[in-house]
Image 1 (cartoon, helix red, strand yellow):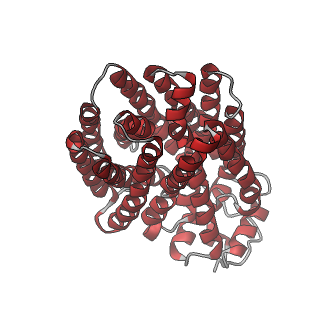
Image 2: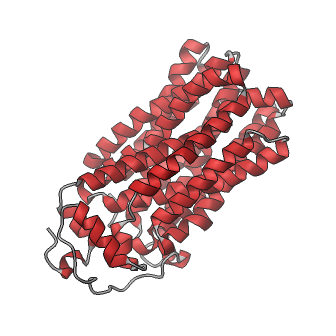
Length: 438
């Protein structure tokens, strides 16, 4: 129980030494749900790609531009919208992002041209990029240190679960109703969730205590009461803080080296991951799989990720984040290098599942590293800019993949090239050294 003002000077210490409350469980559940919707919004264009390309006669190179437009929006959202969560709060940015991720797909459902599709994917990406960094920060600040790795990666597992479920839905919806119906469904789902998040998601307790926005004491007491602690009569003494949302803070003497390697690890990992996520349905279709199986290939990739993320979260509690991430990524590179020898849908679908298991099992741990690495005042800025740096790889991956496909490079050769980026990502992850990160 909170007995004095001093007891709450460090919100994270209070959370670390207390049992997880029903409020915290509700926050984790909402964050998981948000991530599931995020997975749907990111990959809706990937699932729609085969039908979209056929209907509008879009060449592979231009399809790569469509994929990269959304990723460019995600980069801008993570780097330039998400940092405002360190100034006005995590909750406000999450709610704003929901508006963008709702109206963007709805407008895409009536898009008249490839050019308008590119613009709308960029707008949707702004919301996706901002929401991911803010949710990761929110979850980290409500999680006790002893379970933070497992909680963070479990919440981030919502992304592939949402993508998998939506992939199964897409396989039924697109052949009957067309690709526009899929975008309409994605937009309606996000907008319908907005009131739920508005009502149930509180502001981060750590943010309220450190940054002290208007009405902070009342909001703090409301939260700690729901966590089973006595209310405060006054705010604790203000502690020195780094300027919130200040990118320069990411390059202090303590943080510059780990920030540099974190960005490189994100870049390499994003390049390979989004090459796979964007191109799996189209590459599968080109390899001769029927449309429904080509879409299921993407769903298999994301379903494998769910189990990989669960295992990596468990192992990271025992062996440390950096080691587990590096091993998962290096194993992914091996499987991708061998992929070119696979023939037939009976082998391809399970292989996509195994690749998803390994690459995303390792990849989500980078978010946990980013959330641990930075102090509260610049945490969302740090996570957002790490994601933004990585998203430049995500932009390059599908775009380069589109160029390779257009020039007739085989699926196996594509996979071997992107396996190299995963080897580098594993090496850079090991080099992220800090007292805050295991």
